[in-house]
Length: 102
Image (cartoon, rainbow, N blue to C red; front, top):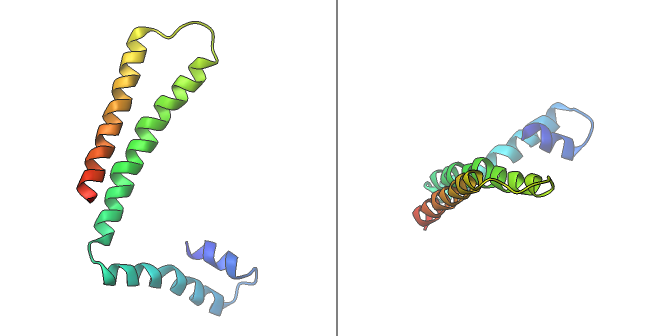
């Protein structure tokens, strides 16, 4: 994050720009957590529960269906059932995480 901010500040690499980049990367999250100490736990819940379900559950299933849709021949019923169950389970995990956040 510091390098990303440092690039946004300018191409020249001066010591002062590095310090500004470090402060810009650290102070906003520090202020947010100081205002609400449980914010970090909620952010981990979102990244861990919802993000993980999307990245490793829903996206692969949708990609498989999209790729298979372009191929010849129907999909076997066992594959459809397994992928549908995986999709529903991922939605269930996301629902649990969303309910836990509320």
